[in-house]
Amino acid sequence: MTSSLLSRLFLAAASTALITGCSNEARVSFDSVAGAELDNGNFGNSTMNNELVMSGQSLGAVDLTRRFAAEVPSMINFAFDSAQLDGQARAALDQQAAWIKRVPGVRFRVYGHTDAVGTEAYNRRLGERRAIAAVRYLIGRGISRDRLEAVASFGETQPLVVTEGEERRNRRTVTEVSGFQQGHPMVHDGKYMLVVYEGTLASATAAE
Image (cartoon, rainbow, N blue to C red; front, side, top):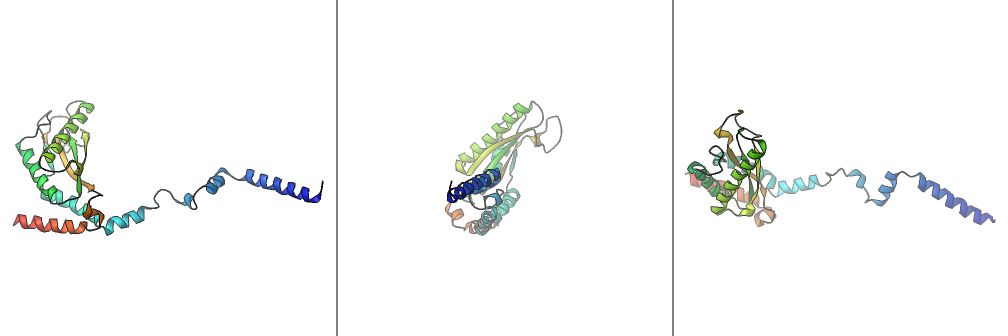
């Protein structure tokens, strides 16, 4: 056997040993995108947060959440074991609908709640029926369904008044700002703070 052949055999054996000795982690790193092992899943969050702030969405959402709760009744109440809207509830939803129309591109979520009377499963369904009733009423007042992001039920799990008995204040829905319609032009081109500003002026004018 020639020395040249022996050298090639030695190099091949050494290479095999080196590859075999590599850990699975090293092989995964070799097959992965460079730097992938450094990304714990939050790599793009800073950029995303900067974009939300620059477009006005981050600050706008906080401002709108506070304004909505301060300027209109965000909560309505229900009779015992009922998802029917009474006159007081409809009046509150009318105010919500008027406010929502002033802020295009903003989405809302309605949460349903119950008191503690009845089973947990029944109360979760009842809370959902109440949320659906509120959403349907808002749609009937001209709010687009795609602006009402979702309905959700907490049932009896988040009482305002802790009691095992009947409590009207716990039988409620709560409407909250949940975010923005990403396809809306005012949101997409970074001008949403102008919408918030104009909405503030409109609300101040209406109050005079």
